[in-house]
Length: 440
Image (cartoon, rainbow, N blue to C red; front, side, top):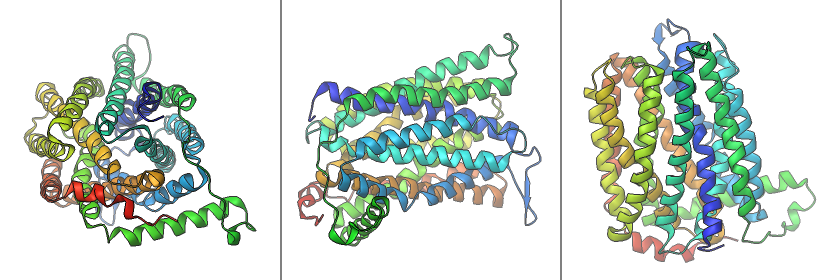
């Protein structure tokens, strides 16, 4: 499969498929959650009133915490059993199903909404671990940055097209006699259907390139799911203990924890922030996100080319600097004015693909290929673990100060710290050390 264009297109199409959920699906769900499901006067907890933005931040953080241990274990199981494709298919279809079900909760169905949203996110993240685990197997060192960027570009294109169709439905809902909440629900459902439908193309072109290992004698007498779970735990613990002896990879991981925390928090919080704080309509927010997707498509490809010229590390630093400016812009954003939000969205779209695509490829170039799913399970943990603190800190600053603007500005610290740490990572030393891992 290495550098085979047909296989790479099939791999990238999975990004096309699941991006409908991560853009229109989660975007409109966040708006629907704040406008319809969440109590209008907020929730009173221990005397403090928690608004929709703060509660949504808490849910995102808690969801990331629940995923913290499961992902590297699932990755280890996929590597050991040579089952990345099967597990990708299972988690993708289950995640898409729950994505459809996020349209079911209505007014006051807070518990149901949180449950189905968390299950959809579990399927999305677990499937992504398997999907990203294919990246080192499909590429060579000279193509990994470009292929990773291509995957994100496909994602922005697929998500953008679905978002345009969603925007058309939302815009014409009233003339067609469709209630706004009904239109929002239809968009949420369509995102899950899009995910499952286009993912089928990926499944037809991807194949596991490794080999399944025979279970150790001590595990052959127990049920296979339990045996693989035990193996996954032991391999995860073994890899975790070894990580401290690989200082350059560890330093990259810590840097990634910080700057990715800022990226993930901004992405998750922006729809609710724009709706509640900036007082923008769902149609306006969706329209801006369409433009962000379009710009991000070209931005991802541009950063892929930039990485080929200056290296992935320097290209990521350029993107991090851009994200720092985005948080500052969010603080000064005026309420009720779509134009400034659009300008900031265009700039965010330009730097969005760079930090995501190149962080993935840079990490992929530092890990042993034969354990790619396990290590991308760790990568997912780093990504989701980093997403715990940003939303919770955002919520804490919002509750303490009563200002979501200050909460947004506070996120700049994550980019400054992460970027500073990334500058001292010795990438070549990290790549040279990847053959020293003890995997069996």
